[in-house]
Length: 77
Image (cartoon, rainbow, N blue to C red; front, side, top):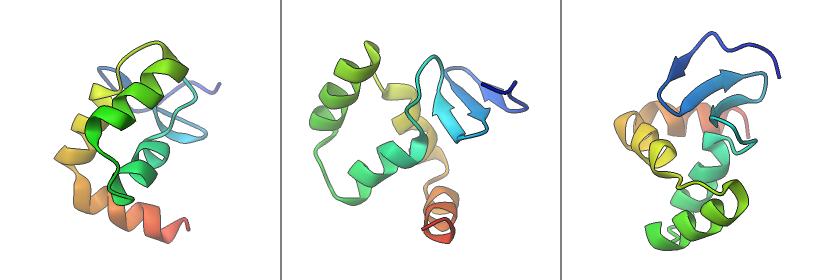
């Protein structure tokens, strides 16, 4: 992975975009589940199994900047 120029807690910017630190799970992956209206407990369980850590930092980052995340998500679709 390339070094990140953006890092806050458990969210880091890599060549893949904003990811949950120590995983290959991007905020766009989490956003897919959020926009599909999956329950938060389901998302947490699914991602926790993959990453062996809770996705709470990803959800908090999306909540903090939901409008910016939606705009960026749509522009890359």
